[in-house]
Length: 211
Length: 170
Image 1 (cartoon, rainbow over the protein chains, first blue to last red):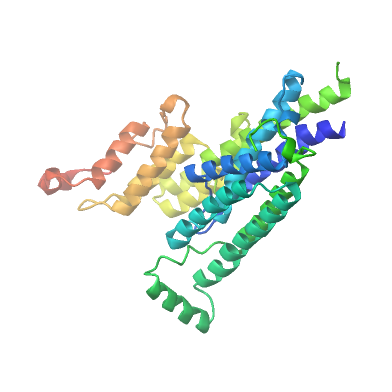
Image 2 (tube, rainbow over the protein chains, first blue to last red; image 1 turned 135 degrees about the vertical axis):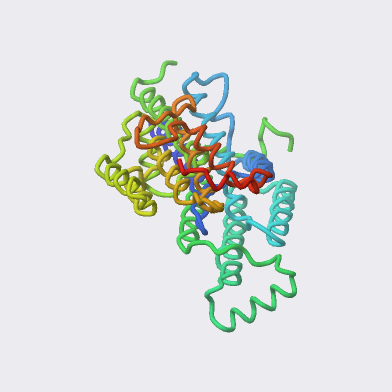
């Protein structure tokens, strides 16, 4: 019963909340940004890594031995997980300029490298927490502080220097302070959801993907 | 092996809940509401329960007929905080038209805002058709109003026709 509630209610609602709030932008106007095509591709890579590591056991969500309603619940979990993964990348990748390109390349290489390293479930969750946490700090603390026009004198001098050096491609549009808190909540919710996914006991005995 | 009824209920309820929540999220991404009033207004409009504030609308009409267009728009915003009523948006557009109209030249900024408002009105109207039966107005359809506004923004040879000075505001 607990497994059914987790699969049918808790996980879909968690991932849908991530998908909903992950695109929230509050600058001059409030807007919900849909995931970019690149973020959707990164989301697919994330699913692949989750399956390879055993963090997600798709056979426990979709299989011919399950009833139609159970498979429908499983399909909802998989689809919402994919969209939530894409939105997490949308959330963490800066909106414009050099940082956007750098973060895109960084996440692509990271996903490919993680897939090649073939980590097990604990290592993957640890790795995701560290990687996403670092990207969060870089975007919402460092870049945000560098782009804040209301900063102190030193910050403005540093900003002018960086603007000159990077030809204005570093600074981002200033976001409402609440966005950082929402992003932190969304990230924590996503990682919790990933931790709660139905997993495989041994990733090395996967029948779904070649080792 | 048949699953217990309670588990089936949980799974069915979960599926329904997820679909409703996903529809709500998709609606937010498509509509892009800017305020909480727009969210609640959009949801009530979806079930046909949205109503404008009639008192504020009456105030707006009084301001509008007195050529107090800024005040009229403030009252219209109070009447339709969710921006879901086609008729109210028509009056918003009309107020931009009348305020921006000039015998020698029109205010392009106000006219552009008028075009945005009339486009909103058309998008909200059922089947895109909007007719306002108000005898105090000289323009009764969204198409005519939009045409007036767009003609005011465009630059062409009719701008130098001296007879345009004889035109009256509608």
